[in-house]
Length: 297
Image (cartoon, rainbow, N blue to C red):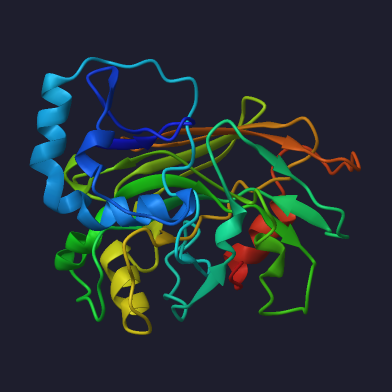
């Protein structure tokens, strides 16, 4: 099942080439603002699968003019440090994660706006994103952890390098529009193995990132187990599982970005830079080599 949030705030399911409005299944959900709605929907989503399927079976396809991010403002937005072996057989690095601003989320078809900050470069990072569907704490590091998920979606972690304190600072990843998500939440039963998915990202039709999630240092259950060892996760939380940095390159004014995860979906966004800064086109090989050698990013 592929769960969508339309631009006119309808909760919908994409199935067999059509999109079906299933908002009526969640009519009893109360929320303060539209940002609160999807986390509350996801809190009951796993228990209402049968009702959703009935709504699709009895409904007619609808026309959709656009989509929002499937979770426009997650309660928590969390990202993994590195978490890829970068195509090497090196020992796993110490596992770690950090928080991003929930207000950095951007929907499909949106525009990443590069801010007026003196970054040395702005990189794209294609990532498999996990969407939490049940309140959970201290999950095991095996397939049982996947029961806590509503599903998977595509995520791009836009990264402004050279900002904040050197070393552990990740402040350059939390600007508004810097975390595109979508287009849909694909339920776990649709994905046989989240650690065997091809991920690609192209800029202006130039293929840059092309890797498989099998290269993760810590697989999806291990990521969930590690994180819930520190904090309780709640429905609507989104976790970015890291990226393989081989293939990163600059984002700049006028770029069109297309990210795809096998069996999960295609996420497309544009880039605007009011300052019209320019960096070399293509892959940032120096950065890729540095990450392959040692550090997280």
